Image 1 (cartoon, rainbow, N blue to C red):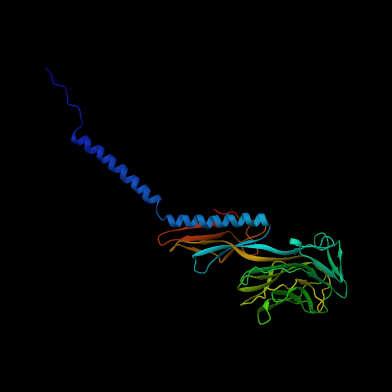
Image 2 (image 1 turned 90 degrees about the vertical axis):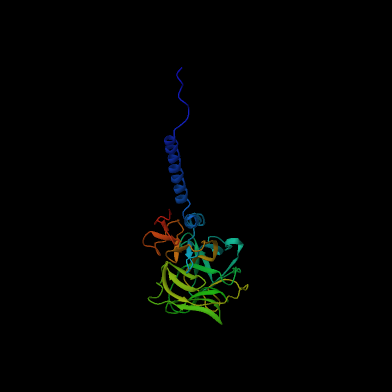
Length: 319
């Protein structure tokens, strides 16, 4: 009687199967190791990318610039957004501004040829507008003041806008702009260089205090910048457009006072760092601000073993 073949596997077959299993396990371990490589770097890149996308959305939603600032040590980044503290457009009487802030007009009148819509026109002897108290949030906040102004004739010193102990913009009798932030005893003050402000022409005049430096600009073009420290009164003095002592002539429209406050901050896990320009700014449309950026911006997230980039294009999108 013929005996049947025993079932089972030979030693060679067993070794082949075990070798295949070992190869597959090794490949799986290698894939897991690669996928988990430098998780902190990828997580940090995700944080930076999230900040950039949030900044663009916030700029488009609020119709105001938003900046991303990288700390000098590269270990953190934050977003700086604008919070409107007071705004007046002078479209109707009474001249109530944002948040119900009043505006009492003396020596001037509403007229239909403002920069956009109506504005305030002052007579030859000048006038002023007394607004309500525009509160400062804290002693170390940033500040942005913007005024559209059309001077008539440069023949006397004029206060354009001022809040005692906080900030001010003025013109001398030659039409040269000057500005300050802080109290008399501890302030930063600047005087513009170059040509005086053009007569009978609308100009957007800006005062920017970022907590470290004061910048005075005309039509978004910086005229002068000075670093320093300033102490703010944080009092209840009213905002003045013009003043009794230094009345304003010409026409004024769209006065706005914004606080610059930190709204988001990301701390990168040590030893990961972030490199790039000190400031990336999105304008009110959500695109990169052409006044600051001539091309797309690259932010580099680095670890001791690798690096990865976040690119912000001129339209403000990031990837």
